[in-house]
Image: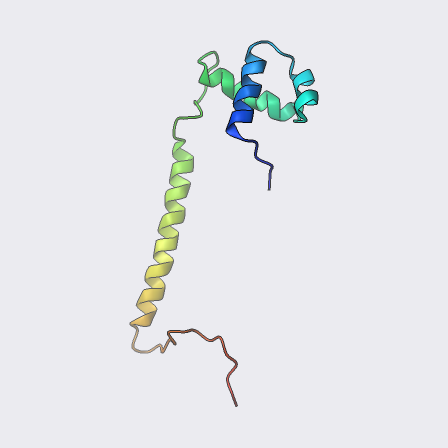
Length: 103
């Protein structure tokens, strides 16, 4: 899992880069990779309107769609489990099978 920096830390680093500080020097000082700082700077320029692209505070439609699909799949799973409870042919234990059968 990637390491996540606080938004305040990221914001201060972006301010310093946009003010003209060199990325390589800032990376060494903050112990952050050059690639990470370049990515942050690119997004900060977009957010400031100095570069074309999607602003970080705009909703990404693909991300929103994936989230909706995940929610719908979870809901469908619950509906299938609920319908299995009412199926007369299938006998489902309300507690599940947590114990070994004696026999």
